[in-house]
Length: 270
Image 1 (cartoon, rainbow, N blue to C red):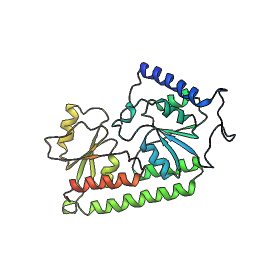
Image 2 (cartoon, rainbow, N blue to C red):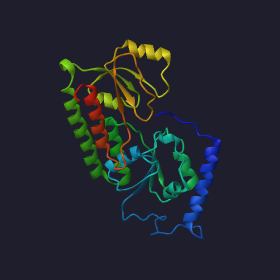
Image 3 (tube, rainbow, N blue to C red):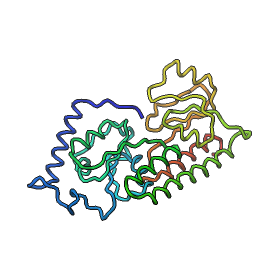
């Protein structure tokens, strides 16, 4: 996803909202109440606040159970979201706050809230190797290594299974060629397609359009969260729109299954 500029007015509004949220939640003395651990009450489970369902899926796969998502799943472009006071109050109670570097509000939330949570930058990529590495890292931070190992294994198993099914649909047994948006190359890999070009996150220029069309790709694998219509409308390529973010269930396996369903249609299997 593209980096988004943070407007000065938005930051001022964010700071004001944080102040309101913290004054509302801290009581007359200004001191958090709780079990003696800075106000965190979680029965030994880490309390994790994540900016979006994408980070939430990684946290869940890593073994976290107490997960609060700030940006609603219905928001099309997560970096444009303006956190509410209730969102910010949740940050103040977290043990870990997970965010991605392209989300401009995440670190500001942590700093303005004055939380003692650990701020964790997550490298969001649904490629099973890179996702698995992040899940392992988060499991170590959360103290849930065993559950993280199972989550990582489940992702690899599902990706391999779906990939095998998609490769069986190749016309003539030959891998299709594909052009992919830079944040959906993992789905191109799921199909076993040969990537002949990438585009984004910026808008495609006329020169890039000509170069990509010249590759005569069979597929265009687009990003649902940044889609602007047909990318190569006159190329004859089949466009597949892929969602990177899971639903409110925070199920990363469902993201793979949904992507496979779309790719299956593009490969001519209905």
